[in-house]
Length: 214
Ligand code: TMP
Image 1 (cartoon, rainbow, N blue to C red):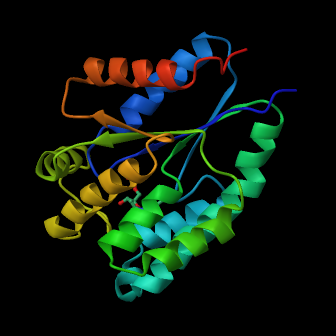
Image 2: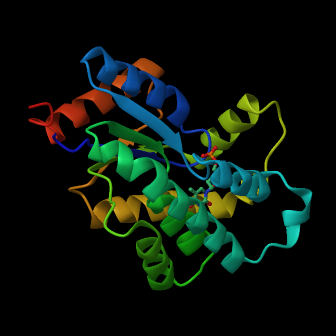
Image 3: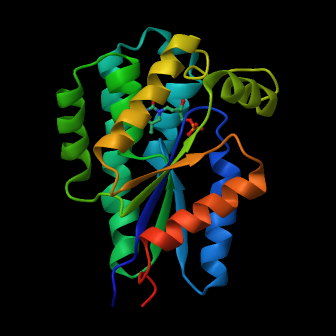
């Protein structure tokens, strides 16, 4: 049994990840590939509780940056052994809405925590379960913020309500990460139309994962 492929989508608020993930998974399924879609934080019962705490719980206002980092890592440490690895081992492909790059960038660069500590915690949480391909949807932060607000009906969750400067750092952090790991991370211009972004994703995917179906 050939191991499944592990593909992650990354990007900051309003970049269109959900729509593009839906289309991408549909295209894979049309080729007869079995796909499991998951998201972070979340994807397990405990992970979804952590997601709620991190995003909406009114008592989470005074979370320290360090606790926030560890909670994201805890959600992932549930997801990897319970959901992602078993699926990959039985040949199912896994498509994840965010994974460890979100922590590197949001907590390491955005919050300003020590990036080497963040990477060590990431590695403790995931072991050697790393994505085969990461599609980074890159978008101007003002446009992304306006789109995210429109989508959520003008109400922001705890992460979305960070200052614009935070998201500028996040965007640059992602681009720097992509420059460090060009073999794994493909940067997609998410300012184009939905159809154009879908086409760009398909073309990067085909170019980088040629032979993945055999
Ligand atoms: P979203 O996936 O619906 O965009 O929401 C998840 C939010 O959590 C988003 O603001 C990014 C943030 N986040 C982190 O700060 N660190 C992480 O490790 C992950 C997975 C998400």
